[in-house]
Length: 159
Image (cartoon, rainbow, N blue to C red; front, side):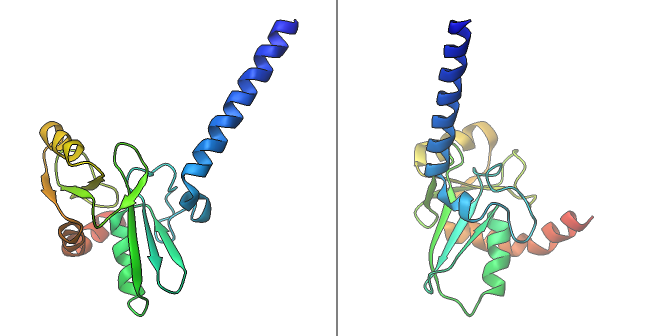
């Protein structure tokens, strides 16, 4: 009986520790739980989420580059200071402008037909391309493709 109680206590402490560490590593998700435009859970889409930090101190958290592009188009009067994106493999936020982006491939994208994934390490992006297809790109390439795809993606989402 005592052994069961101790096992239960230890399991509970372990779970609380894991949750606390996870929450600390993703504070942007605590600040922006759901995407303002589509309502998607940003924790579930941690591998594609983005965070835009504006010069006025405000920030915007989205589920994807698609919804970030929508926000940028609607917030053209605000100066974006930094763009961060979830690393596809590790789910950590990384500098979107320094990331290695993969455009396309056989994995379905988030809010888009043409997938756009970010990686902190070039070797991870190349390994993804080898397994799933796509092409290596920059943040500017990914954002340009996002805007070019916007009409078809929005139409697909509506239908």
